[in-house]
Structures are given as C-alpha cells and as structure tokens.
Length: 229
View 1 (tube, rainbow, N blue to C red):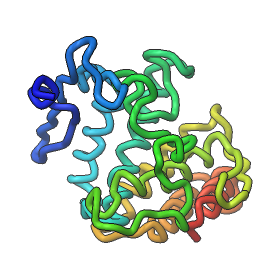
View 2: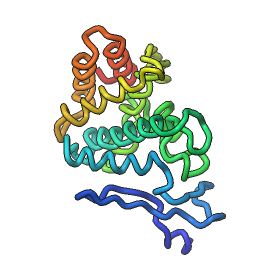
View 3: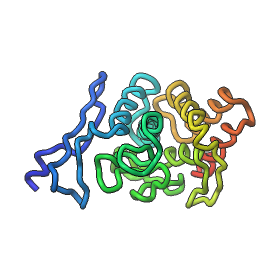
View 4: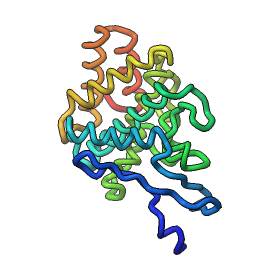
C-alpha cells in the first residue's frame, strides 16, 4: 500500500489554465485489478481536463450537483469528440470509442458514454444519485447527459426507459458535437440543471440545422430517452 500512496492516480484542472496529470503506477502494480499508466498519455484525459478549462472561461458551471455533472459531461463529450477527430474508430489502444481513459486505466477505463451502467453510473434521470458523495454525484450523474450525447449520434435504445433514438449516424457526428458545444459553452449558466441543458441543446440544434431537422429530432429523442424533458 505504501508504494501506491506514493503515486497520483488522477488528473484535474487546477484553474488559471493549469492542468495536473498523475503519473500512474509502476508496471506490475495494480489497484482493484486495474493498471494505471501516465494520465497525460491518454488523448481523451488530456482533452477532458482542457474541457474543464473551457467551462471555467464560459458557462462556469458550478461544480456540485446537476451543474457539476453537466461540467463533467461536457468534458467527457468534448474528449470523445477529440478522440474521433484524431484517432480511427475502434476498440483497441489509440482508437476512438465511447469510453473515458481506456488507454491508460486498463482494462476498461473509467466511464462509458455508450453504457454508463458498466461503471455503476446511471443512464436515466430516475436513477440519478442524490447523495453528498462525489460533490453531489458530479462524475456519477454525468452518465445521463453523456448517454444522451451518445444516443443522439449512434442511436439505440435506452436500457432503463426502453425509448429508442434514431441518431444522426457516425457520419454526421460533427452535427451533435457542434450542438452540444454551442449549448454548453454559449447558452448555459452556472447553476444550470439537466432540464436547462436539454432545452439549450434543442434550441442549439434548431438554430444550427433547422426546426424538424434530423439533428433536432435526434437531440430531442436522446434527452427524452434518458428521462430529461
């Protein structure tokens, strides 16, 4: 245990443009069956922390409860977009997917946008965490808007609600990325909740791609599927 306490197993945005990335663990040392490599070695983790910097200088979402979960979700969403821009889609090392930190926390990563339940996170508003831990569930509840983003692109059925989403398809991924970026950076306020984020995303989709467009429909369906109306 002493050797584990010597190393930092996390990354965070420290404010004023300062990012901190932990060094992970030496080869052959595990925590809970997981290996931790250099946190700066994962493209999505680097992008995730930079995303917190964007939030800090734009919507300034309060880091507690629902606005805190939106803060975390924005960073996961932007990190996923960065992966798909720079890396080929796939499930192996240095390939773009919908998991967070999978290249340096092995096996598996730390969160899934496609299936938040893989890491014990909710995929529906009715399952949200309402306790005091994790700053009121900022990482836990990020699974809800994260999953809405995933469904708006890839489509599918939410496991909890059973509601299906058509999605715009991977070929139109950039539409949903632009919609969520515009909504979270330009339209949210520090105390915004999930309903506010949903409304902003729908308006953003309509402004960018038109009322009744496939993009607006996908966004509406995705938020409804995760229980946010």
